[in-house]
Image 1: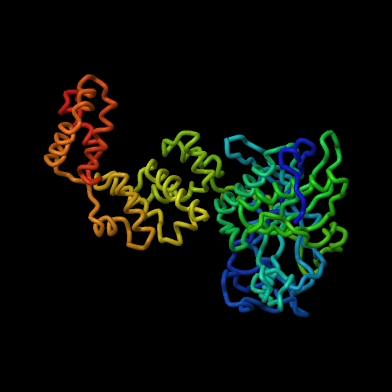
Image 2: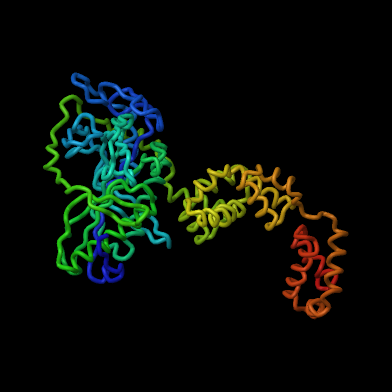
Length: 503
């Protein structure tokens, strides 16, 4: 394992410089240059044809929907849209690339010179400058069999699935990010999160990093404080979660700093991220653009979107995610801190769906970012994944919240009900019925329980009579115990204060 330097020590000596290449698979029905389907999870090599397999004589045709999505992405990233651009061949050998070149764009991308404003966890804004967003095609997928890690090292043999070859990709490339300092890993995570949120808002991709429909290559270099030249960069390839982006950037900073402090030099290379160990390992020497022998693709005509079409597409852009969050915050009545917590948890859409299903905003936030997030964190899973695996949907939480707001359950009973839902006992009302969970509605029974508790705790009761109303909390706890947790705590408090002359 490589040596690393303490993170704070690394930042005391070096300034990190970052750059990101985010690859987004478009959700078009067919591939970028042929009519093959793009459905995820199909049987291997069942969604292929002579074009995407690169067979001799097969000619590509550009997917118009792919171009449209590329323009909309460029506009949403505040980019200039080219009046004229063309495709290029990027030549290199890789087993899962059937043509031995990738149809991409090089010096003439469809979108360029943009920016994206992102929000850090404490609400601080940060502008990321966008170099370009260009169209290209995805490669196939290699499956290495027989090894312990799923990588080619140690495998007995490899299998190739070309279903993914030719799926439309948009590659979004940033300009170098400088001045991030100690917040570099946090900025990395926030930027990729903002790209994912934007792609979903545009409805051009499901941006599911765990399935590979959005992937991030993270470039990191260090330059000694006071220097004006960037250091040699490494490129950590295909990082597939927000948490991993943050961890990979932090690790590379500490790894490179250790090498430089020891008098060594950084090798320009690609690196692999290992989620289980939290380290990167060497991949292959990183090529420069000249090594790919780019030249214009002779089988495709240039793309020249009219200004009228571009403006028509601009009119289809959705409300920017940051503005949408501000609007939702006002509608839901959340404080800045509450909304920030919801956003940082990735729960905005989930809470919106839960409110649409009938929950109160406060209830939706409480259950998703409270109890469910706590249990998901304990299980080591993102809360959305944790909930989905246990059949907990926005409608489930709306039903649970309704049982509380209707007065049938208190919070303690609702947590018990949620426990039942999570272990597969059914939906909330079914679980509450089966477990006999329901607040006692008989005021007479509650008044009798209060009277009994007051008689059993004369000293506390006298404090309440003397005006120390906060002492009623101890009596409420006793009433809840007497009623086996099936009392309405607010109603119990009212009755206690009435019986003790403080109502």
